[in-house]
Figure 1 (cartoon, rainbow, N blue to C red):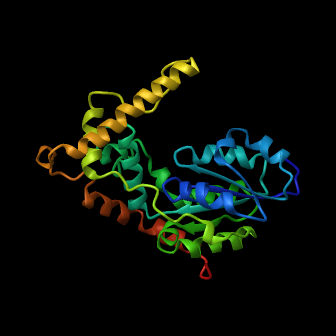
Figure 2: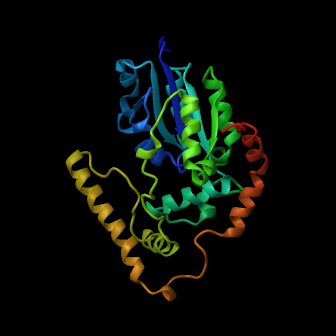
Figure 3: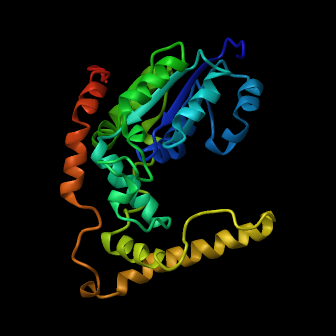
Length: 273
């Protein structure tokens, strides 16, 4: 474990909870704290060691690799303050599923997350937020700061101000871009790419050992993927199945299953934020 007097805040996501907005538009504009960008996370220990600031913010979103990455970071900086942002289970699951469908997942949501037998791509552990909070409590000396995506979505300025209070940082909110980066892909687009994924492997993956060849492969794959997404907009709606991409009943079932877990997480909510 590193011996350091630096005050480190470790924002661990999770993914699909506004992390990209915070990392790109908010954290770089914070003052009185040094933010280490996500593109430097692969060498985060060297970055922290060489940083001249006593106040440091690290941010990286995790999902299935949560415990592994937390264990690795805390083995060096156990005194860091972990910050996690949570989202209601059914919303989180739906958003994750859409992201994976866009990137080539060809199964239904029950294949993605199997509530009955836990045989899906995402496991019950990945949606057990109380467990994740417990991991943070175990791995770090300081209790985790638990924030909520709904607060960021409904009152982004208040959320950012609260974040600044927590991290003893400051920001000029007038310089923050609050415009939506892009509108989420429509059900029509996602149904189209899910259909094509049954015949073509659109999953992001390394195909060539040569980095140049792999770069060309990634560009080709991205061109093909986004071509499908945007071509689908001109395909008549009657050609698509009327079955919803995600069953509302299934999401409601997921929400009910994790009701106690969510209520337990809400106990960490600070009334003054």
